[in-house]
Image (cartoon, rainbow, N blue to C red; front, side, top):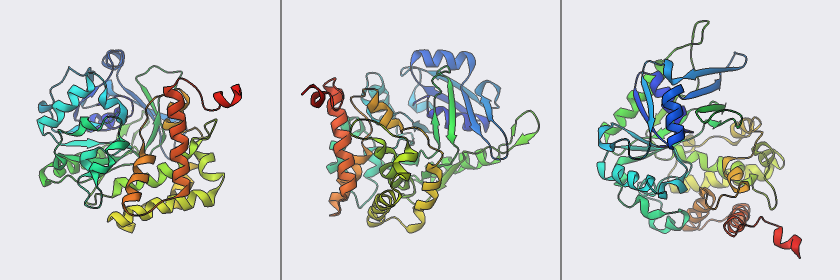
Length: 355
């Protein structure tokens, strides 16, 4: 579900010979079915970008709207939309059908679905409902069939291209936690193996492509993204403007390190292991290549009335553990102010300038 970011994993699965169906808007579906889904990504040691078109792959990739497919017909369902979208007309009904089908679901949202939080003993998931745009859409799910995959690869749709084109900026791996059931986890491990084995014919020989699927036994590995989001993505949000992730992280590296490690400490308090986390230095180095504001910041700047609130979720879970961070509190307030302004159709600072 979701043909933008979802097309990246979809392309990798079709490249490995699997059949993939993308759920998206009608115009997107028509273009993908006609011209294919196109992903461009950097490959170490090569100049420029390598382009992959789903029309030229061993597997089959096609797209349709929210009523085009029956969840029970599939082995695995991937949730790749932004969290606020799941309450939209059509999407909500499909999500409910997904839940009732009991087909295993892997979320690659930044915002962990509530059923996934329910799998972590150290979290009171019910107390986190206020962090979600429409928490009721998750009520039909059995937590045992929900897992979380960290959306670490950074990708975007180039504004000058058609909507079937996705460009990868940071070609890191998808990192998924196991399912509750071994049989469901075995599906992920098979996909992991199949993607790993692929060699792509780039025209001058077969090459190994980045962006793999890595499956982990720990439930906490995907939560390593929380530190990155709170140190970088959400700190792109300033009082009256948005700044690139690179600037958010590197303009005050010690402040970034502090909030990053604070979030990691929260994850450790929930039961994570040190090896589940990503060292700050590795993230800070990766952030040097992120020269645009985060998707959350861009959405706010474009007037979005709702975005994924991982900032508020982390703040809420931390409070359950008796932890708080002044930096996180400030970030939450800034995001709140932009959302309030967007919902009232005003930009932050408009009222002040009027006075």
